[in-house]
Image (cartoon, rainbow, N blue to C red; front, side, top):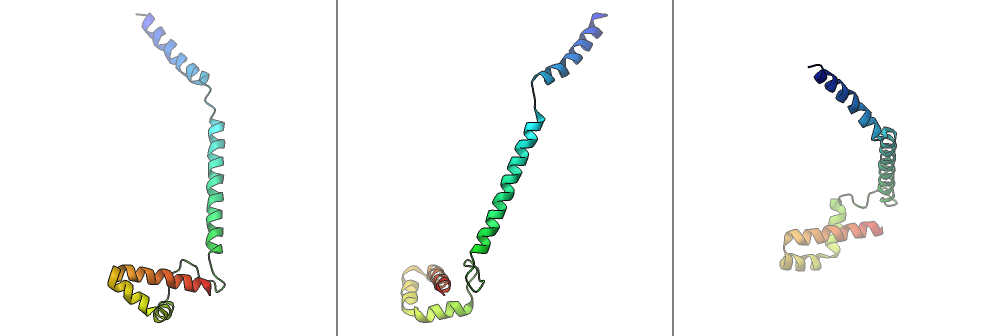
Length: 109
């Protein structure tokens, strides 16, 4: 009977000793977390710089929605092409073409 409590005591003392012997270095994990955090911060800064660089001289973002005036101006200049596309590929695709080309024209200005 006396051996069972000794056996339990011996195994409970051995478990922390084995865990410590595995060499878990929590400091390295913290350093790795800091490295990844720094990398994420740098990526966010680069994205912010890219957004700032994607504006034209008037301060309008290249990927900003086109205004009605830009669309109407480009449509008036390219009505024949738009009508041809409207008949051949449908309104949705013709409008998409119109928006892309109007953006390109706005970017040139």
